[in-house]
Image 1 (cartoon, one colour):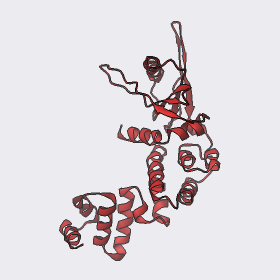
Image 2 (cartoon, helix red, strand yellow; image 1 turned 90 degrees about the vertical axis):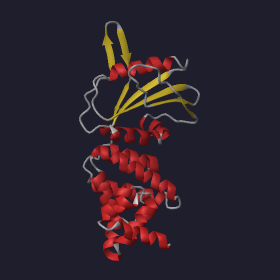
Image 3 (cartoon, rainbow, N blue to C red; image 1 turned 120 degrees about the horizontal axis):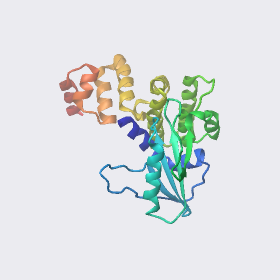
Image 4 (cartoon, rainbow, N blue to C red; image 1 turned 120 degrees about the vertical axis):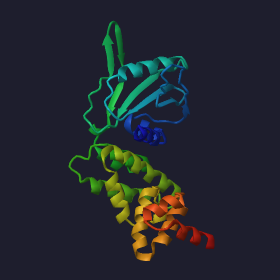
Length: 261
């Protein structure tokens, strides 16, 4: 459940690009719409936004095959219609690893309800790689690599992110973090970590404290575990106790060094 939430939040942060690259919708203006209603079961639609003051875009990001989705989508549609008179476009974007088996309609008992269903695994990653923007590059990791070596694709993505964001450290951290998070949905996070570890990315530029700690440990074997532990404490805000445990050193050694600075 936690991973699902993280995946959805990372995709929300690039909702304009999701709309543009996946749905082919050009976004000039975007406004978040609140739709949650009071129920015994609290359910909130993932993304509901007003696009260009012309229509409401509802996006659901689904990580597994939930056969109740048509009913959930219909319920969300009913909620949204109570907040606006604008047309509503609904999309379910499936980012799961298993084969897509969900339906996108309810056709029974006089009900004729249909929404759009997109399987990210069916999209050739080459499309996003050729677009060559930070947003399109990270979205590529959710797509079909065809016969490409995953490690080569990840390395290309990270190299291009470094190229585009060489003068924007915060932007580089943001997009690398997004890449790390959504790569878990394709079992690629270990490859992402490996590529980052072997690349020329500086320890302080890495967004993930987990990867930073590993790289710090590697550095520690050469120059001293205490120095590396302090870097991890400073850069990633991890507690001295946790860092000391991971590096296998006495926390007091770290505390003493910090006091002397």
